[in-house]
Length: 334
Image 1 (cartoon, rainbow, N blue to C red):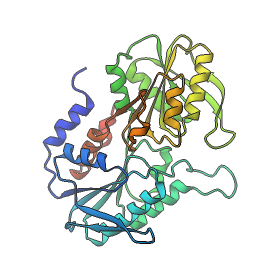
Image 2 (image 1 turned 120 degrees about the vertical axis):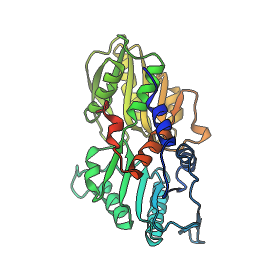
Image 3 (image 1 turned 135 degrees about the vertical axis):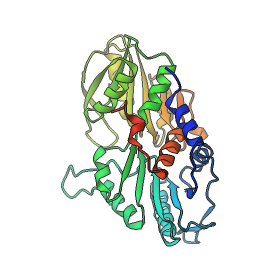
Image 4 (image 1 turned 90 degrees about the horizontal axis):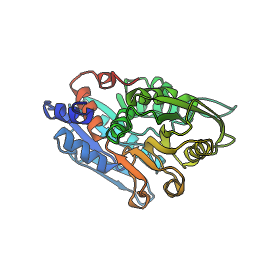
């Protein structure tokens, strides 16, 4: 198969001249920021974040940013409101520090699930957050697997949309799931068909779709499963796993109807409340995710496999800085 995408990215980043670029990381995922800085071969920018006595966030940039191409890493994961507010304050600080360009690197885009009005008097929070970020000073957005593609259009600035599927696909290929007749990819809903189809093509297999309905948030009922899945290893792919209820319900429905086993994969490990424990106790054999959201040690159960996103993000950052194509990273992934 040759060298992997991750290996190619690491080599290409190392050959680049990244003069004039600075990378800063908020408190949402400092460990990922450090790994990205290592791949890029630059020091992580110095910045101090503290709080006033009443809980208000204070940000101080400890080095000059004047005239620099600044990248701010801050996924808006839990605690979402704190991380989002910290990001907006950082944006304002760098804008006032005369950075030449400010790119927000949001591996995980919070508030994305309300991307349209379904019922009267509902907000569209995905658009609200986009407006807030651009007003605060964001000139470009870099995100991985947005919950809905239309979120890109909510911004009045360029958005580079990365995909986590190829990273998951490479892991599955290395694990021996490519080209097997007893493997099928599963889309947990109709909206995820494109993602499932791309992974199926990468693994040279077919895919099935689960039709479901949500009687209320974080609850799901499986209505029908479209496609051939009996006596096969079923590999779910989704953009996120939150409480785990949806993926577990889908896995149980497949197993009850004759599937051999179930593997769950996602880009964003939201893992609210007792999600990882539920997944560990479920019939799912393995849970695969990226490190876009930090996972504390208590949630790192034996079934969980965490893949690295830093090589991909690093390459995308380098390409943006050098005014090179980012979309070409995914010419085989649609």
